[in-house]
Every structure is written in C-alpha cells, then in structure tokens.
Length: 351
Ligand code: NCD
Ligand code: ZN
Image 1 (spheres, protein in one colour):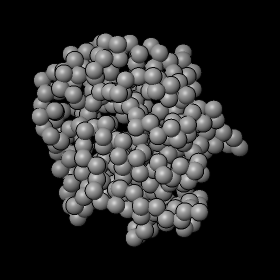
Image 2: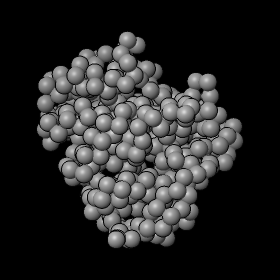
Image 3: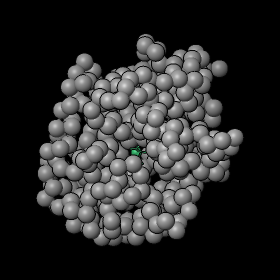
C-alpha cells in the first residue's frame, strides 16, 4: 500500500478569509497550504469595486509576506448595480479573477447580493465578452422552497436559462452538493465547471442532525442525503477536469456557531489538503488527487500550474480541537472535524 504521495502545490478556488483580526490566522493557514487561492468577497461591506479588491489584496499579501509562492486571486461581489465599466476595470486590474453571484439572502453576508438576475445582465454580457469568470452560489432563496431542494431548483430555474442567454460565459458553480449539480456539470460545455468542498464529500445530513444538532457541520449549501454525497464521490472519481477543489473554508467564532441561530460555514483552511487526501484514499483514487487539487482549477482559470511540490505521508494525527483568540472578541474557532483523526500529513508542515 502506498504510504507517501507527492503532488504539486495545491490551489483552493473558493475560500473566505474575512477581515480584521481573523485575517491573521486565515491568511497564515491558507499561505501555509496553498499556492493560489480564490478569495471570496462577502465582507461587511462587500468587496464590490476594483479599488476595494486591490486594498484587500494588499492586506492579505502583507500578512503573507514571508510566503513567496502564495497568490491570492481576488473576486468582486456582484450587486444589482455592478456596471460593465466596473467589470472592465476589474479585468484590467490583473488582481481580480472572477465575480461572485450571491442571490440576496442565500447565505452569510449576502444581503447585498442580486435581487433579480436580470439586473446583472449588462455586467454578465461584459464578463462573457472579456472572459471573466462568474462564480455562483447556486441556491434559490424562495422561502417556499425546501432548504434541501434549493440547489436543484436554482439549476432548473436560474442557471439553465442563464447558460442559454450567455452561452460563452465562464461559470463555476461553487460548492456543489447534489447529483443534480453533478449531472448539470457533466452535460454542460467546457466553460462550465464546479468546485467541491471536503465537507460535502465526507459528510451527509445525518452527520449534521442525527443524535442532536451539530452546528459545526452546518454550512450552506446544507449537507444533503447520502445519494448526493455518492454522486459527488463519483464526480471526483471520474477524473473529469470540470470538478476541482474549492474548500469553502468559512470561519465563524465558536460563539456564533454554537448559538440558537448558528452561522453557516465550516473552517478547513488549516487541514483541507489532509481532508481531501483522506477522501481520495478512502475511495482508492489517490492517483487523481494531484489533478483535483493542483491542476484542474488552474487550467480552468487559464493560470499556470504551480511548479512547487508537496509530499503527503500516511501518518495518523488529530485535527486541533480549536484555535484560540481568533477574532476581536478573543473567541475561539472550531475547525471542521475538530479532535478527529486523519491519516495523511504534509511532510515538513509544522502542526
Ligand atoms: C459562507 C460564509 O460563511 O461566508 N458560509 C457557508 O456556509 N458556506 C458563505 C458561503 O459560501 O455560502
Ligand atoms: Zn463560500
């Protein structure tokens, strides 16, 4: 049995770093693990202009100044008022690699998101023309739609028509969770891809709900039935380059997670590579890990593959129970799978 594997330095094409004090820890973890990261713009206030994105990028680069191989790629937050001129400026910045669509109210800090997809048509038209990628949080927000159906209904009612209206627009359907999403990606053109998180590959809704509500498994889109998790596993096993890594690492303080109205998000920036390695090993496809973590995402975004390499060794270790003093309130951050054992470690990483 293989107990060591060398891959190219991985990328994370969907990560939340936050701002303020939290940024110190999230950037350190991201920079220790990844080459390129695609940074989500859902701050308060959102990163909706090129100037805001450049300032945020500077802050991140400053915290990570000792990590030469680390490249944060920025995104803009698509609002009802995003103009084609803003899109041109974003594209020309060389710092911004995508624009994120949040349906208003769909998830954490999405209030400034789109109230109606048609409001974004001028911006989307320009993005299609310039080859700037649209990242989508693919869930409808209609209160009459069951939370477990929100991704499927979004694909049917919003995404399908959108891809017909803008057939050449580059789209990444983020953090997919259903067999419907997998089928949609498989059936669509080369300009449409998807990211998959470690939590949606490892867990189903029983992990969230059976034996008591487990707030640290609560993220959006919500964990689904086992048959959907199996579809995601089939997607990574297929080796289709349209599926690649995006952790959706999304830190919230312990207080805000363990709450009568707990926040959505799982934190994995510290150990996402080890989590993915566990998944690929469990399903006997470690040979596909390099493509999924390091190559397919970079290829989709027309970016160079990272030349650096990392080695993973099979050696059991425990995920930390928590990270102390994470935010301004000195609250703790509980990582995904806290206190649980993983079987792969990154050689030379200090745990
Ligand atoms: C994310 C966050 O906390 O910013 N939460 C989550 O559950 N995934 C937002 C998002 O990506 O939906
Ligand atoms: Zn996210």
